[in-house]
Length: 212
Image (cartoon, rainbow, N blue to C red; front, side, top):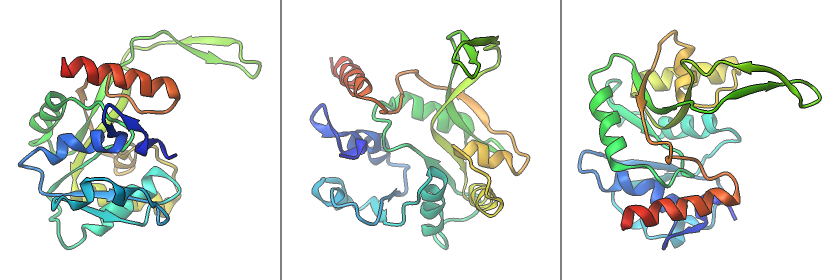
């Protein structure tokens, strides 16, 4: 089963991921990008929300899917409108982190993203998976989502990456291709991405603790 549809604390992962945006009155709309053969989405309650629309042109890479979502908004968004991109597999976004991102970035000339400072000691491995060097963690951050950029900037950035066939792993990296620097906004470390089974168990604990 795709990880975004895994059951989690009474909902699916994607329902938890979308909830902070569905609940915001200043969120004009939500575009969910799905694979063409996705047959699980319609079983959820969310497809009946007037705020949510679906685009079934998900690509092989994250950047392809985000670009498809951006292109679906063509003619509906002005270049200066804000767009926030969030991973469907990040179910633990805190409402206060989303507030902080929007409040911090709304007047910024470029845009920004939630991120967490790296606190672990980092090691670079050699070809034999032995420690080659210890890497300084100074000024290093883990990129999280949502990432928030003007519609025009994000559209140009993702189109540029696609045309140049530059593999970008998040929107901020695409924006870098335009020689722009995104603002880092401190977010909670528990806004993690579901990747392995243990992450689902961790998310259960996080959500249960918030409910208490």
